Image 1 (tube, rainbow over the protein chains, first blue to last red):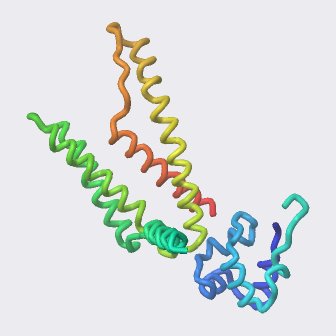
Image 2: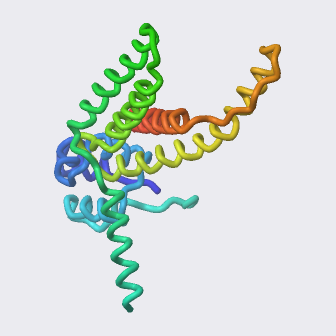
Length: 66
Length: 148
């Protein structure tokens, strides 16, 4: 699964720390999601969706091997 | 219907138990108590007399201090940390089982090679097993956090 979290964050001009605070996680968690080392839960994905104002599948997309 | 309700209630109890964490400050308290206990255990080597009971009590205290560290919250306890905890617990459990099975055999073989008398096959004690599993848990958890 790949994501465009970094791009969405840049559009809103948010740092990793600011985004982390908005959804109640650590900066490391945001970094791990952005670098595809951690796949967030549905709950966290929906929180991100709320911050970005977009559907979850607009910034999380499945890859062929998934 | 009643059975489903009972089942849900049990599930809630288990979830509450799994979510139980001590405040973050207990992590420091746990480590301080651990090092004090550890130093006390080491210092008993320099005293003479029957200190077996004291050693047993100190070992139990050391396990409790490590458990306090394990159960303490991180500064930000989010789902990635929960995920790391689950991974660390499973690694500690699996490695612990291998340790229990293999360590006595290794000890026996080494004793067979090195000692002149016929060695006795001894299983590990509860302290050794629990201490090993807690240390594996904390190490794996630390490595996962560091690489996050």
